[in-house]
Length: 362
Image 1 (cartoon, rainbow, N blue to C red):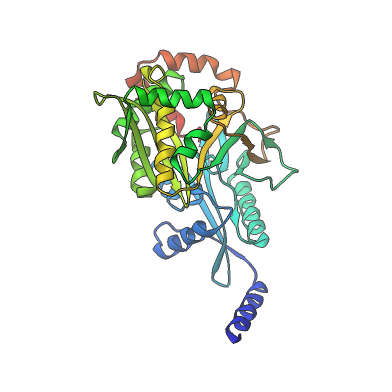
Image 2 (spheres, rainbow, N blue to C red):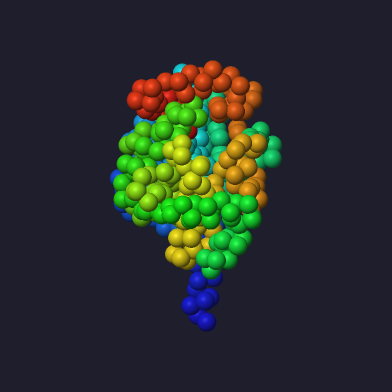
């Protein structure tokens, strides 16, 4: 009883202490451990709140980072990962977080969330950015302009493998079984070599620049077993389709993918996601996060065909030096000529030139 009273007294005393905001030093192991321990337990946190993203933003893309954390009485109560993306072509922005589908504040108290967002706005003004972008999963600022282009798809994984198969709508389930009948199998890759070849070819066909190979190397190096590549092969061992997934708590998030032209004919893409779901079920994971898609696209339709329902994402913008939300995405008609040109470019040249462009598209 006394220990309970002491704990209540300690919490009451801590509540009177003001929240302070600090920057994460990636070279301070203690601070990094405290950040990641908070992210692991905070309900609002995602894989993209992990501290490792700071090294990736700096070392791979050269972006200036501002990873903020709020603490009270020595206890972390919130984090906000930010990176500045600055280019002549796409402008000067502060984003939480580039190359991430989720971001914004993850906090265990309203005071911490408010303090972090206030500091983010102070930094944004000091840097002279055109806007601050927070990629929230829940709306926080109804008064801010909202980008409603994207949705996400999430679904619980049943504890039995066969139950997951039966939960797939009939037509889509037939495609999975088609891949099985073709004798396709899945393999886990320890390096992103096969993945990158298929990924780069895929994005080239779609007319968009590929992220650099060193980025995928860094993801596996920084996140270890929480970043995994699954590749589908046929009976001869030929690589057909691949996906790089992130693991966070009891969730799996297939994030980057690629395939060769014959993959569709053999239902390799359908089989790929089924294999990832099957393996995740056997690992005891509970949530399959199909990630983000733009409304009205083939990716959006594909995920709906799997029985996943779209959920809104709340990408909120605080505008400083612009009057409207930017539309730096392939759906923007003004990029149509560039996309068509990129498709015709030799893939070797595209893979060399792409990283110089895509680093500013996060």
